[in-house]
Length: 569
Image: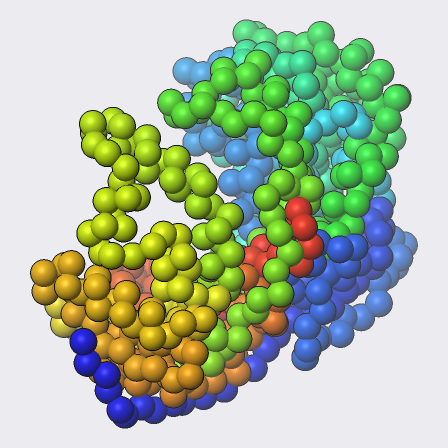
């Protein structure tokens, strides 16, 4: 093992969007950062100030936001792909109708026109869906004013997407695609039979008590004319001769359920709505801005009901039981990025942590990709009983003795104590910019640990045990141990840089002062590896993407926040 003596550092700005009030939800922060698991979203510096929210009267009617994610989300929510040949899947036609309507809501008429639709008001699907629902998905083309403006600014960075959105009325185009595949659907005119009543929001919820063939599901489609909507929906749903669906109206929404479930569903709504649930409302409030799509999931009742929906196993793996915790997520825009943000609350096993992502921000500026895990030693402590159980299980299958004990004897180490020293209180792995032409790329890691000498000794033992297959270069600086494939990069990791000050990092990860896990990918630097393999008509889109960031943080027992951001140039 060698220890170099030379090193060098290097250098760079953020974008985040503040809150805009959104009717139907508590006053919380909007698209800024990963929301904390408290009752507000985390603020960031350098925020862009949106104009105030217009009233419904001032805003008027206009086109809404359009994203490919919306189509995917709606199809996934109904369990049907729009590309399926409905002539050979007649039993899925009801799902196709609902999926098509959901996707149509997300596909605004042509390009996003934020200046003409700024209201974001009115009832939400959660206001008319049953309070005992354990899963919920909402799509919204009428979110807050700030979201619409942020969407326009972000999509301006993706000219190919913006140009595609501006080609005609995409809701009508989607309808025409469905109609061409099904004569029964094609008998209705989008302009005359659908557009006059179709609203801006759609929600889907699942309740306990369903079966594999008939889930206890309700879809709420916002409508502007209940009479016209009911007539058109009944006509559409009648196209499916293999199954039946019921349509009821409630407070400006069409409630669609599998046949025979309408009375029970409406009775459940009369008793309480999902918006009345303290868990649901509290989780969505803590989530912050709900953007163009949001979802909520309550693990304990969901896992119990899955036994009825699809058996007690999934992919051959037994479903867990007794799992507690809820997850809320939102797909939302920032002027610089699109973000999938979420929170988990009431989850057993999550412990509050005071660790942070500072080691990530001090990496060299030319870092292409990096991962930091803060509190790795705590994670090892928490996971060790399970790891031992898995090791014992594998050893028993192979007819071998105690695997952990054999590793300890072979390397002369003590587990898990030495493992905690090796991974430390902070483990950061990094890949610098390079031509990637060599057989072994340059990469490395730095560990902040309680015992640097022991950590270095453990690496020597790993080298020796590999029989020369592993060659590591190290550099020690205080309680930090840098390890790399080259002496120069080990030294550079210790010298560090100011990655956290670069535009791409700030937009992708923002404030990492409470981050337990952080991942950063510089797509601009990385694209040279794959750009030549991208079809020429798609290169403009790929080249418009700047960076990707993922973060996860735990600031209270049982609570966690996470975010994935895609940043545009």
